[in-house]
Image 1: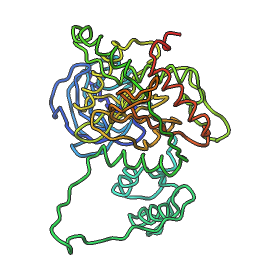
Image 2: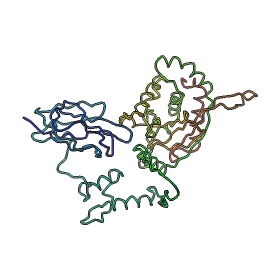
Image 3: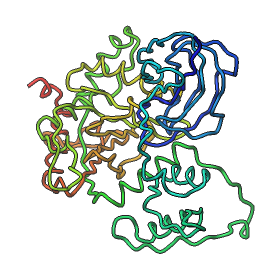
Image 4: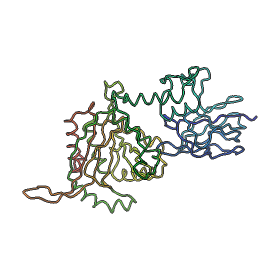
Length: 414
């Protein structure tokens, strides 16, 4: 007997709505378990959502351009099975489903007796979509429309008041609105989705975390000599042995010595959550902006393993095939601009981390050694840290510890 099954968006590791960029099926298509049905795009990755059931597509409830989140209805599927087979976790997206009940069933748990507070509020679909895009809680917005309805103007007023309040106790003068075309020819270029969402996160981190940046330098002449000696061995394995993997190992060793840097501040602000794992977020430059995939358990891996994993993550970041979980769980971050240039910069902390290391371009400098100046390869380092958690003396000590490891990598085995 045919049953109609609702296929909904599973847990995709996103707290906010994501874009539907492709609908891969049409009404009448016969699907097998795990066949992809739509493609979603978050700020940093694309993913296919598979069907957890086999059956025939009866009705499609989404279209390209829609923003959807976990639990959103994708399509109705007619299945002949009395109990549909639950699909295993797919690599592209996690899809979980319960066995269908008679008549209509849902692939995600639904409590029909309770409605969320947001659902009880009066607001049009357009207003709800705007609130989702801005990551706003509708219950916090004062309604001035007819019969207590929340209007777009109410949402805009809420955002404006929040900006004037600064969101963190600041009163900020609104930026002037200027028609730049009066001064000459202009062109308007839209920001990429990554830059728009990253920009909001960076702004929040900058205004809500008291940043201090400690600058230092490491003489990596000996490290570079060793790296060059191992280069051919790495190439035979199909790997690029970059200075970054050695920096990652030195950072991991420093974090073990100074665990306050491998932590997060409790939301109450009264406790520090010390992490027993070392997962490093590494900023990767892509055509659409910077993304920060996470390399896990860095302290437990060799430089060759790190080189292979870093190459894989970087390639997938540029191809926009990273999964959401690839960018979650960092305990410390590294932003390396050494391949581009520069002598120093102030990296913004990637909350909820409490510190981030900026790496600039190494260069040869005259260094006074044993009574004379000799050319040495010097690497500039910039450590930004959360001053609520780490004081200046700790920041300087961490940099010194890191420099010691980079200047003599033999210390890493002690």
